[in-house]
Image 1 (cartoon, rainbow, N blue to C red):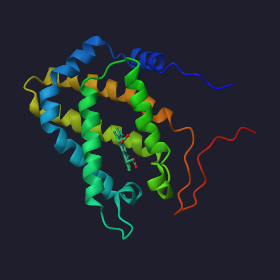
Image 2: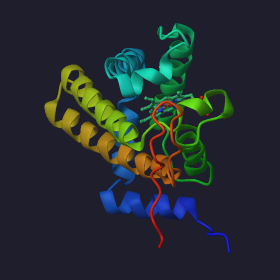
Image 3: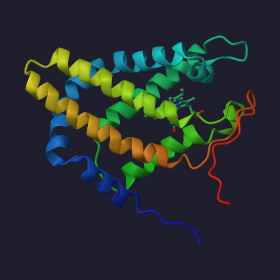
Image 4: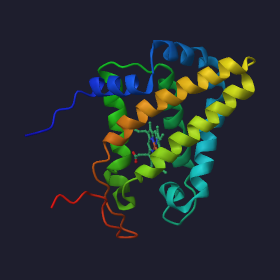
Length: 190
Ligand code: HEM
């Protein structure tokens, strides 16, 4: 019997749980110009961060072990597209499904990078933390009213956590890497 999930309802439940309401979404809207202006800097910082750690760096290397600049550029654009889309976050039929698909691309590698295995879910969590911290810094530095900056930061934090729940929902299991032969992270049902 397949398990049917009502993704918008799940998203709504998490939104209510973290207190992401319309007021918070309206506050996020007020940061649009700033986030778009600083977005490329932010996504570049995310990828610089990935390159600092061998376990995240390896997803962006050529077979010779060099950084694959072309792939990196494409990935920065994907992240920027996601950030831009986050400004228009809403709980409808489409949004959670698009997020779920994005999560699955990370948890279940497409054939062209099957040998690399899953992107470990802990790095998805770490990336969200990195983005939250970077956004908080931008809002703090660029907004003239510190209380508004604080409210905007809180609203973004909540919204990104609601997204993270769905991004991780595709992590039912993680495939082993060819390199390490690490056992897949699947629960034992015995
Ligand atoms: C907040 C966390 C993250 C978000 C929101 C995000 C977002 C995205 C998006 C929107 C795409 C394009 C998906 C598509 O074309 O359908 C993508 C692809 C990709 N991301 Fe991420 N990403 C995150 C974390 C990571 C991390 C931690 C890594 C690795 C260290 C990573 C590596 C990749 C790779 C390798 C692809 C290409 C997938 C493919 O082979 O088609 N991402 N990401």
